[in-house]
Image 1 (cartoon, rainbow, N blue to C red):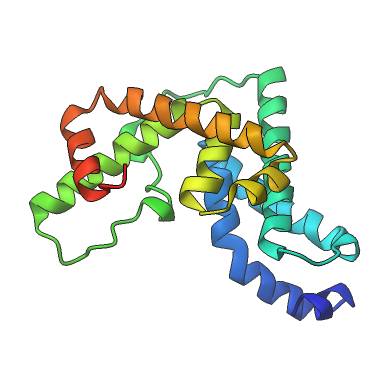
Image 2: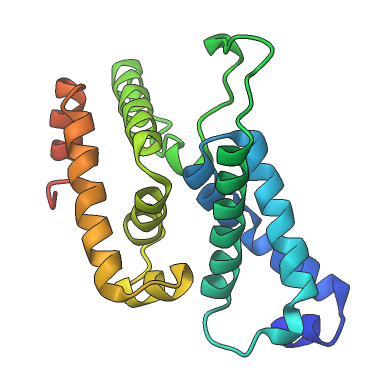
Length: 196
């Protein structure tokens, strides 16, 4: 499919977009923390991938695409830092977007109490994730959520493998520290994920 897309087959590229758009959106959402910004970054990722498809030289397609997405997210964050925006209306929890797909409940047959606990846990994780600096969010997302190896994450982010390891250690420590504000949820997380 990639070879066909490189030859200009738009239908083949559209199939690639369909196959990877959710993963790219989830990565962008985790780094940027805003639904609209993540949607923009996802669209921009695929536009840039299409324009640069002839430069793709093989290897991990997902890794190549995630590197583009990560760079675009960092561009968005730098732009946001240079030109901070103040919303015209105060944020309203009732209008908050649904949790991203990676936080979706995977147990629809659970009891209402269990579903409520899972929702609280997802919300706590989301809050803590978005309190991390973007560099830490990106590393944590790539390694712990997307399950890239340290070497793959280093290649995607364009940093040494040792930097990935140190940022990941600090990101995990900061997540744990943040989750201490949610003691019951931290206990639940440890129970659900005993490998720590």
